[in-house]
Image 1: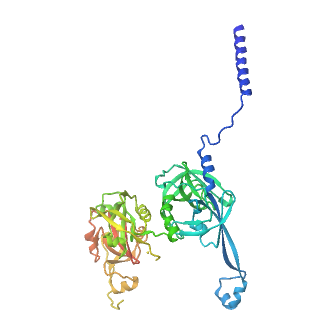
Image 2 (image 1 turned 60 degrees about the vertical axis):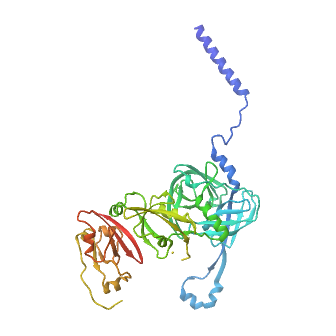
Image 3 (image 1 turned 90 degrees about the vertical axis):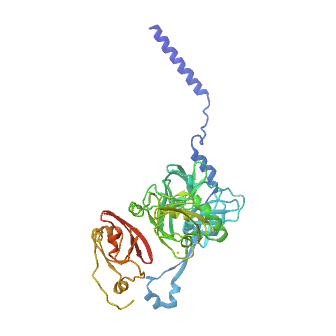
Length: 467
């Protein structure tokens, strides 16, 4: 009993000593940056992130039915008296890329603006002018008259990995210098909206809201890897950013010429399907099929042909037709690109010098005959005919080769593949089709798939079907 009491007393003494130490030892403030790289990134990079306010003058009518032509005709010149020019305001983000005041942002932030005002992180404001814009990739470079500004380092977006942490900084809904954190959710996403037709967006779940547009997407090394650009309305955790490597390639052109001298190849492409690979003897599982070549284009001059399967560009393997488009769009006018192709089981390399993208990519004879059919056509749900004068007039056919589709069965393989009445069949499984009977010779009895080369509206494209 005495021993137990001594142990208790000793334990109490130890506790007293510990509390005594705790009470007399000062508590050190924890370093906020310890184990928290985001706080450090936000502090170091925010000074180079700017707020962009734009103002556009628009004319609005105070009269009812301002778009009614009869209303306008009735009032004539007096109609203008009832119109008012008012300012429309908008807001976005951007970031400084040179000490002399060049700022990178989105084209849609400054497009059509009559007045642009940039506010720095220290509260100073400057008028800005547009040096150049690229609506295709939604990029713009603007400039303010200032010196020795803080700048952001541009990273390498090609090295980004899905799942990598990123930080977005911007001015969502006018809330200046808001920091959000997320990961790279996906790469090479396609966006098709208005003038934006881009295949290489980064997808992130870092919160991006209206006003964030043009702001930087930053990796944990403090480098810009993307420019925040788009959101999906009503979705959570889905935002898109332009890879910084694309911006780096076009910035010089924007500053020097006011536009991008983007390279033009001059082909139409589509996915490489299993059916196409089987029919054309292509062993590769990844690639892009050239469905048509623009006459007189760099591709035509270099010898690229319809039906070629592209497998690599400048030694870099391509995954699909979107990846091929993205790699070509990364090149500028005048660049030479080496393209690996498979043509009729033969592997070849073709070097193409890209050009600059331009501002613009009958008789009365009665020979009516009943549409012809075959076992293949019945299976896939098509009715076809040799070309006649009447059919040429009915469908506006311009070609002298091939046969014409005069019927597509509802719910058939053909309809589900997007084939339409009036399309022309030029090839089947790589063999030219001059008349309907050629189809049976082009497709064997044991074949359970077919690849058709079709012509529509002056273009050709492949359609693959398994049945």
